[in-house]
Image (cartoon, rainbow, N blue to C red; front, side, top):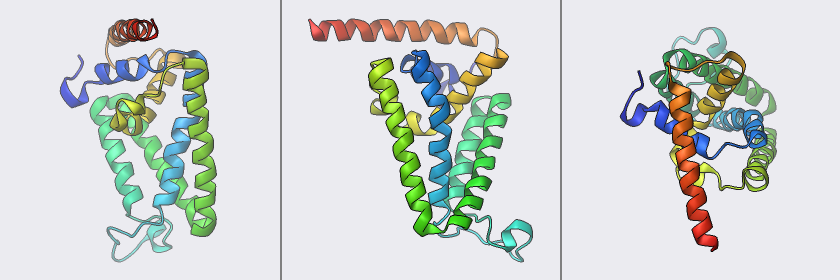
Length: 200
């Protein structure tokens, strides 16, 4: 059974889905959303440490992994995803921490002077691709213009859910996708109606 309030996955996913109904736009987001998260963590690697283990052991001894804002962001994302859905959320949380470890490794090797250039190029590419997806194929402004929090915090999880649904037929609970589809159809119908009135 679905949750309500902040962790109402059905409502949030329907909102996201209403802005991502075109298959090409969905494909673009599938390839570009997680790299945005990953490269953001690369840049956040250079933020000050919030906590330093003492004595330092293992990977932390070499300064490879740092408990900084990158780790904090990863933890927040991971906890939110698990709260939304235990199974898919656990997978998403794992991917978040894999991104954090990978981003930390890459950032430590590149150094700040090169890392920020790589991050800037990747972010520009990924965001440009997504805006093209919305403007050319979806023909609807991205969700971030209506709900900034959802666009940044929840988009990676929604992309993962779409992949799990497409290739594994996964749904958080029975009837989830049917209910979401009904909400998406209603939202898009309302949007189309407003768009026609505005253009007439």
